[in-house]
Length: 148
Image: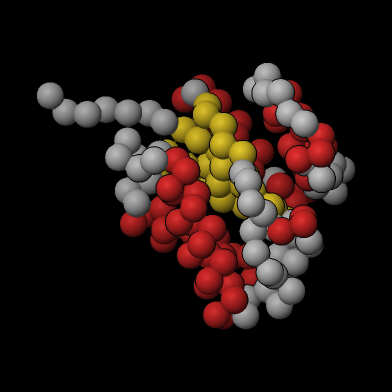
């Protein structure tokens, strides 16, 4: 029997101390690099986008790839690439943690559009407010001190 999966995951993480260093001009290079990492891990990227202080990745998680390992690989490799290529001058690192949330097939198009419109979305809402809303939507208890 073959293996069939449908593991849709939104991954969100921020720059260290939420510094607004991901300048728009070079974000596309970062996103393409992360797409390459996902392809190498047999994960399908549906959408990636972000703003100056954080990124959203919507991907299908391949069943052989542990989520924490994937995020670790993305953060380590992209951090090294950013520093080697001097992509974002004031970038020091990614934040220590991350958010990862699963979605059903019925939410796929809505989430793709949400991530696509991150720049416009964040003209009205901060990253922290957005992240708190997502945590609440998923009924995740959180301590405010870890969000600052």
